[in-house]
Image (cartoon, rainbow over all chains, first blue to last red; front, top):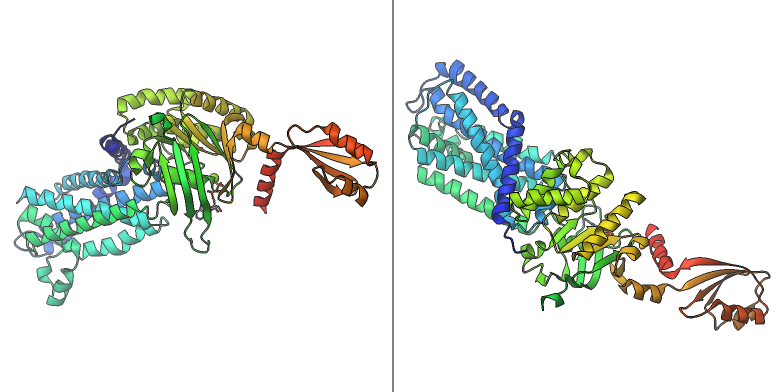
Length: 257
Length: 316
Ligand SMILES: Nc1ncnc2c1ncn2[C@@H]1O[C@H](COP(=O)(O)OP(=O)(O)O)[C@@H](O)[C@H]1O
Ligand SMILES: [Mg+2]
């Protein structure tokens, strides 16, 4: 039998994850809608009305892109880290490892799950945002490019986390103690231009700052960092993350004995 | 031409498991060589911990080998891992499907991973699920199945893409006798229809009944290998236990040196007959030297004994 299971295998994985994301929508799509609704209400409407405009935009308009990005980051990361770790824990990952699908196809299948979940979450959050403010679009290309690269990078990082994870605790440590703080400090709620010199310099080492700013630029046309650097950071990190994932997969790290 | 290519060929296969925390590294395979022709029903017989699952794991891509070579249908698992895997269906020792999924989805997804288009997969899934008596359960979640059904689900899953080679790792462990017979019939038919089957087991009966060739593995080494007939003639010596009416004297022992006799205690002898030897000859000699046999009983076949010894040794 000389089948090449690349496309069929890939679509099988993607279909399966899509059905799962939709079936458990109350765990996948509802939480970000509720959380971001609260952010928009509290920071945007209640507090935001007392806060001065940032870079010429009302506070709610300024924070909306960052809050959408926050959900994208979390949902992409959580999707791959949880589906992959669960598959590893139940040993269903063996179904994929014994199959003739090449490693990169399996990675693509998991990552696409992360992209789908991030994309659906972004749509839900944008709809929620529309209850609180109106959205302007400055550059659709930059906006979509930023959200795609971010979701891709986070899906890959979630996968790497799951490959190394040996317990369910290990898959929540990184999101809680690394991802969330970096996101909060990544210029979601403020422009780094408002920070003292020292903290502004430190902030530049935070990759999430570039994601949030590129995304915000797509909406508002303002950014703390040049777009060329933002995309170089996102693209570079994504390429490295893909290389690492592929290497780990081929060597069966954490998967094979 | 193509028929001369073995379904499975391994040479000098070694596996040393890495140290895992407190667990020391184990040498699970110590240089195993095997060649399994296409169409064969091959039995890998050995006690727990012999290295059976390790060998199956290496062939199916779940375990990385430390040394040696392995080929599936002439394809090296190093050079063509993905192509080699396409020829195999695996029934692992432990359940490894998602218990929250429906039976039909487990089988359909597997077909997809092997590149079978959905339409074709739906037809094949129906065939294999019906063959294994699971069609009525197709919409049940896997966790709702009984142990025997879960085993059969793994067989259905392994067969959905019509593999040429089926690897079964202890498929009947924990399956009750009646179901085991059903499974045996099914596997025999599958083999007759052309599928090469490699089955690991620690049941001698199972290997004897199903397999055309057997390798006995123990402690990571193949200790015997051949057709079932060969192994039986080679190893199936009859052993008789004899109780004597009186105590055996050292003089009598010396006189029996030409017989394959073991003195168990001073009134018990163990006599092993090679193929072709008769009981009469031995008894005649014993009578001549004054040994009165009070009772004779059969201790079973040597193959069984060899095997039981292995298992006993392993349990310690
Ligand atoms: N993941 C592992 N890590 C370390 N040692 C292992 C691992 N898997 C199996 N072993 C050891 O390798 C040997 C062979 O095991 P295995 O291949 O499972 O035997 P069998 O399937 O014949 O019962 C055993 O001593 C076992 O303890
Ligand atoms: Mg085993």
